[in-house]
Image 1 (tube, one colour):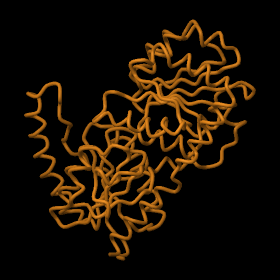
Image 2 (tube, rainbow, N blue to C red):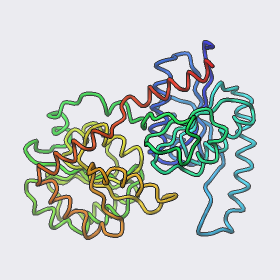
Image 3 (cartoon, rainbow, N blue to C red):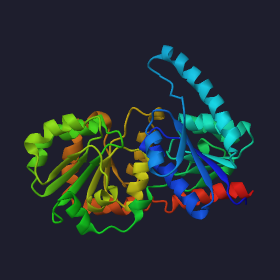
Image 4 (tube, one colour):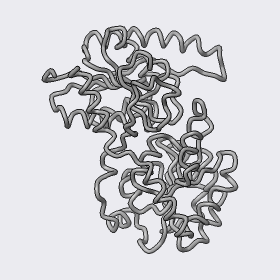
Amino acid sequence: MKKNPHIIVSGGGTGGHIFPAISIANALKEKCPDAEILFVGAEGRMEMERVPSAGYKIIGLPISGFDRKNPAANIKVVIRLIKSLWKARKIVREFRPDVAVGVGGYASGAALRAANWAGVPTLLQEQNSYAGVTNKLLAQKAARICVAYEGMERFFPAEKIILTGNPVRQNLTEKVNRDEAYSFFGFDAKKRTIVIMGGSLGARTINQSVIAKLKEISEEKDIQLLWQTGKYYIENAQKEAEPYLSDRLIVTPFITRMDYAYAIADLVISRAGASSISELCLLGKASILVPSPNVAEDHQTKNALALSSRNAAIMIKDSQAVEELMPTAIKTIKDEEKLSELRQNILTLAQEDSANRIADEVLKLIKD
């Protein structure tokens, strides 16, 4: 294998795509310190901020997703797609990658298609139990397809599939001092803790569900709540929570120390994005999943069902969450037998060391 291989990593749009991409890049750098890694993302999306802060260069494409509700707006989308394909071809021509890795999202579609045209081998990482449109379109030309769930041959050629699981943020798997974690949040180690997280951008329904039951939550003196609202919902959440604020309730737009949050969590409430589920499995956390209905092919519901059907998580539909979510959470966190059952079952679904396994496949492609 050449001394300083050039590797493109492309994808993004949400933390669920970005964090695994960065984890793969970190694993590649650890195995091959001389590797030159270039990220390709979408202009204006969160990867343009998160990737540089992780120490990697990124180039943005003027690409956007198709608007299903307003077909007329897709004329501009097509124009952006054509511009993005030309720009991606220029990036490939100048960077001369030895391999290109796609983690999903529309930016990866343009970048990996340009790599295919240049004869560069490509590896796809599919995070969900229901394959995304971009990866399904790219699968025919891909050399390897790393997946997180069994049964993905219904979407991809079986001979290309490798079950690796989804990479998680590396710091989450490091040993954490729980006393430090409780102290960080100012919580009581003797009380049970619910951690609520709606993803990097927040989740409207989950926030509405908490707001609807704030009075009932405040009356549960032995339960404490760490509530991550997302930046778009923090102002309203703080206003609604003000009458109930105490040392048992923290309202925050973003949790900076997720390792500490997971360490103290007796129960996690979350959307059912692939990265969140992978973290919950790896850490063995009892959880209630509220799949977002606003995602392609309703893939979050399929992700959640993959766990709830094995009694490895509780699933509550988005349409039922306002009435059912917090009462179910309070009931569950008081039931030690149920918590133990959920923890044990979710651990059996964990795929360990995913980033390193994917990095090994990338390096094999370069060597071959």
